[in-house]
Image (tube, rainbow, N blue to C red; front, side, top):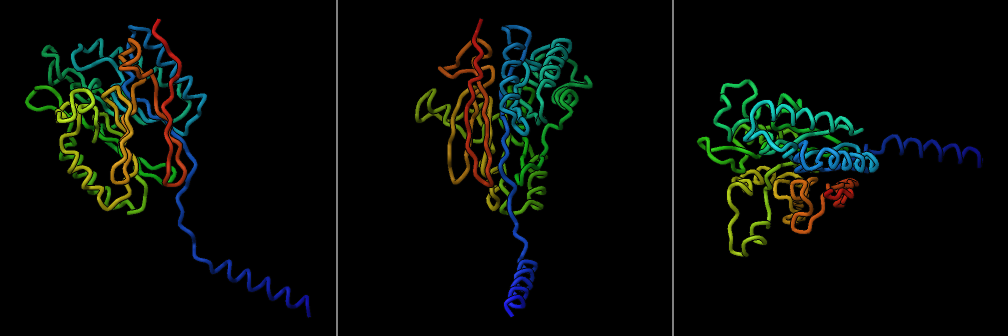
Length: 297
């Protein structure tokens, strides 16, 4: 009798397990590095500095790397030969990374905008050089560990004048359409070179000072509105060579310093050369600014 009871119990237990609804959960426990404002160049010992940063990244062994723009120094004002050589240096150096790399466009990757001697009909004029040399579109998205990552092109130009921060209509339409296919609870991260939100201007120039177009994405409110019913958790930013971590409405806006700090001339307002490590567990994350130990020689 006891044996029959045990068999019956096992049978019922198996039935209950098999009928249990499938649990939907987010994959967790991954980490990635965010390296912004590298400004690699043959001068100022920058190549060795960047290699030292890469060596530190490889030792930390993140699952992937996102770069935050201003990868080279620079293509805006330079001729083709100089710009070409800088992208070659960048590609050869980043090949040393042992994990996938997702690049973000910065203002310094845009070829010829500020050089009147560069033909606007050149096959690599403007952002075409960046797309060709990195193999990435100027904006795109990818998934990892249950998260959705958006890489923005935040650099635009009015009437051949100075660049300004902006997400153009093409990207806005793409983003709005893409979000229709993303679950409302899916955690989302963004990489943008020019910040969506920052207090840098107020700290530099005074509490009542407004941001200016070259420092912040001018249509940030409209961009963020698209995420209103979604689970935007993290915005990774560059451009300012400044570290800040602002939390507002459940979103962390992190301007992540600079690999080059003061353009390979030492600390920038006391901030060491460094990069960000992001440690993700489920929908939560922690960040750490890594000083990789380079010093001006």
